[in-house]
Image 1 (cartoon, rainbow, N blue to C red):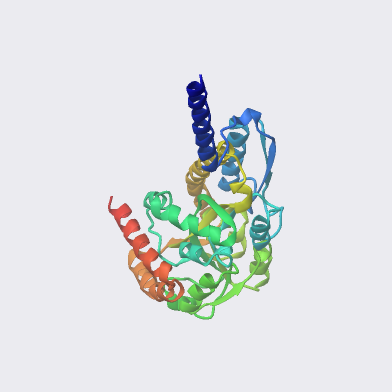
Image 2: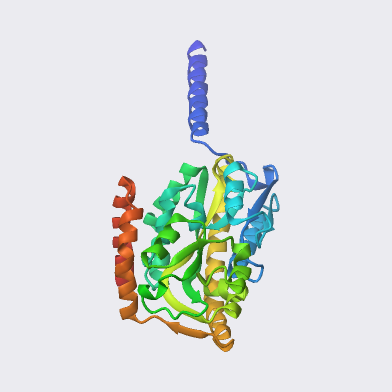
Length: 347
């Protein structure tokens, strides 16, 4: 009898020990329907007619459906939660749970992410770009965001940026000499235009149309959808398809908030982000051709740089890569990024 009790006691200790080990692994396996309700505040800058908002709505749909309504998503588009920088700060301090922001706006908080905005680093083959962004190299870069108190969820590709100018045709870097170009408040973009001879002027997104109209700035860079939906082509004479960079939106979450979610809720948020990302990319592909035709129909001078012209711009841009992505980890990472992109294009 005593022997049986000892065996039972030993069994109970083993079960208890196993339970503690499993608990230490983190997370909860409590089904979503038994978990507490949460509200996700999700902000972004684009209008409700944009591909990004299509993706945001898909995120909301998936998160709420997969959680049986336990997760409620409140969408705040069109800069309702403040300027671009204010929204990033809101995520950092936790007043906003999730936001989709340009990498250039995030880079002052996490320097490593500025690689997304180096000129002429991304190929014109968007499928190759997607492959790298969604692969191991892209995921490693997302992991660097924890340095700023963020959890990186994914890259929402906003399209290739174009140049627009008031009265200057652009075919080479020298054509930018003295041109007042509006840029986001990001050192990498300021350096880009200085390298080409332009006069870069940081200006808030909300002030850009008036800035172009009043001549405070003479040109700007943005993807087709942003140019068209904000009517920038109405106050510009030239729209130039240059493939010099991409509008790389990054979905970021407050790290402490995300880490505090159960495993079940993390999985739902991750799935919703993925589905939203794919929906936004699909909407972008469907609308870009229409936006381009509408811009051309408005009477502006619309043209595409030739491969030879792009090659000149690319060579003029390499010193920006070397100067601004020069940390120990950065120098090693960018070489792997170059190789991953080259391999993806070849495949």
